[in-house]
Amino acid sequence: MTDGNELSGWFGRFRSTRRFARLRKHPVAYFCAEYALDPRLPFYAGGLGVLAGDMVREAADRELPLVAVGLRYRLGYYLGESPASASVGLEAVLDAKGDRLLVGVPIERRIVSVQAWRWRRGTVEVLLLDTDLEANAPTDRHIVDRLYVDDRQVRLEQEVILGVGGLRMLEALGVSPSVYHLNEGHSAILTLELTHRLMCERGLSFDLARQSARSLTVLTNHTLVPTGNETFSNDLVSAILVRYAEELGVPVSELIKLGLVQESSIFSMTMLALRMSSHVNAVSRLHAEKAKEIWTSHPMETITNGIHLPTWNLVGDDVSGAGDLWRAHQERKGLLLERVRKETGRDWGRDDLLVGWARRIVSYKCPLAVFDDLHRLAGLARDSRRPVRLVFSGQAHPGDGEGQNLKAKLMEIIDGELSDVAVFLPDYGLLTAPTIVAGCDVWLNTPIVGFEACGTSGMKAALNGVLPCSTRDGWMAEATDIGWMLDNENVGSNFLDVLERDIIPLYYCRDENGVPVKWEGNMRHARRTIVDRFGAGRMLKDYIEMFYLRSRGLE
Image (tube, rainbow, N blue to C red; front, side, top):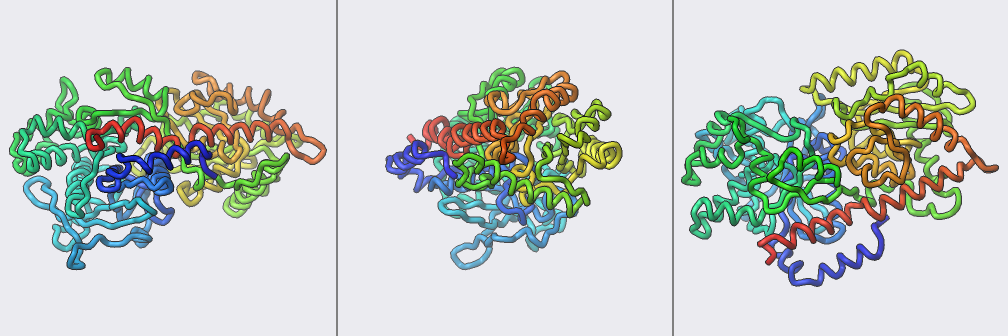
C-alpha cells in the first residue's frame, strides 16, 4: 500500500529538480540514538526508534539520498537481549586498504577509537558506530553496550561518540551532507563538531562558524517529558569535553554556554539542539502548542509523524469489497488469538470483542487507567452474549523503577481479578507488535493529554481497521472523527461508559452473514484516514519542503 498517485507524482517531479541532483552529491544526514531496522537488531527502545526505522524505509522507497547515523548497541535496551544478533545484516565499514575504518573521538583527556557498521536499503545507508576495539581501554570498549544506559557519564560519552564520531565517520567516508537532521537532541554535540569543521575549512571564528553550522542543522523534538530531554551537570560536561574544547581552540565554558539551562548549572542537550538548529519541529499540532509553554524562545513548526505503510499494512490491499476488510481483519485476529492461546492457555472466540493496549510502560501512558472500577469492567467483559477480552503488552526500562512497578501491578490485576478476560503478552517489540496492532478490534490509548507528543501505534492499528479509543493526545487530536475520544480527567469511568454505550452495541450488531456492517464502515474510514494523512510519505514530503529545501546547504 502507498499514499496514492498524487504523492508519488510529487516525488517523481522532485527527483527531476536541480536540488535533488545536489542531494545526490550532498545527501541528508539523519542522526538518531535508536533505529528499529530489524527485529533481530537490538538498537531501539520504543517509538523514537520505530519512527526512525520508518523514516529510513520511506526515504529508500522514495529514492531520497540519505545517510543515517546511530550507535550499534551490543546489548540493546532491555536486560536479557542477546549480543549474538547485534550484527545481523550489517557489514563492517572498511577503508581503501580493506582495513576497519576508524576515527578518533576525544573524551576527557584520551582519544577513543570508533568503528562503523553499515546497513543498506536502496539509496539509504545507516552507519552504526561502536567502540568495541582492542585499541581502546577495557572500559571504553563497553561505552556503546547498552541503549539509554543509566550511568550519566557513559550516557554522555555515548552522545559524544554519536555526534562527534558520527560526523568524523562521514568525513572519513567522503560524505559531505547538505543538511543535518537531528532526530531528538541526543546527537546535538554534532553541531559543535560541524562548527569545528567549518572553522578549519573556512578559517571562520567560532561565532561565525557556529552561525553557519546552525544554518545547516534542523531538529525534530519528540517529547516534552523531562526524561526524554537529556541533561547533565556542567562539571561532567566540562570533564568530558575538556580535550575537545582544546581542539576547537575555545574555552570549554563557551561550549557549555550553548546548552546551558538558564539560571542553572545544568547542561541540556535539547537546549543545545534548539539553539543550534535553524528549523525545529514538533511531531503533532498539540505537541507544538504544548512546546510553546516550555521553550518560549524556540517556536516549533508542526510535522506530524507518519508510518511506513508497506511495513504496517498487514491486512493487505485486496479489501475493497463488502465484508473483505472484516474478513481480512478476522484472519489477523486469529493469529493474535493463537498467540494468546499458546502463551496463556486462554481459548477465546474469534467473534469476541478484543481490546488492546500495547506500548512502553511508563507512568504518563497510564496503563492502569481502565482498572478504576474492576467490578464493572469484569461484569461487562463476562457477558456471555457480548463478551469483551483485553490484551495488554509492553516493557519497562530496567532502570525505571516506577515503570517496573506499574508493570508488576498490571500483571497482578490481570492474573487476579481479570484472569479469565485479560492477558499480558511479554516481549513487546518489532517482532511481536504487528500481530497485536492488527489483531485487536479496538486500540486503547490512555496517555495524560500533553505528554504523548504523537504516538504512532494507533496509526498502525487504524491502518489495519482497528478502531482507536483514546484520550485527545498526540496525533489523535488531529483525527477525532475516527474511533472514540476519552475524557482526560476521568479516563477509566469514561472508557467503561463508551464501551458499554457505544463500542459493544456497534461491534455486536451483525448482518445475516455475521458481518458488523457499520463497524466495518468505520474500519474503512479509519484506514483511509491513515493512508491520506498519516503515512510516512506525507511526513517525508513535509520534511523536504519545510526543512531540507530551506537549508543553506541546498541553496
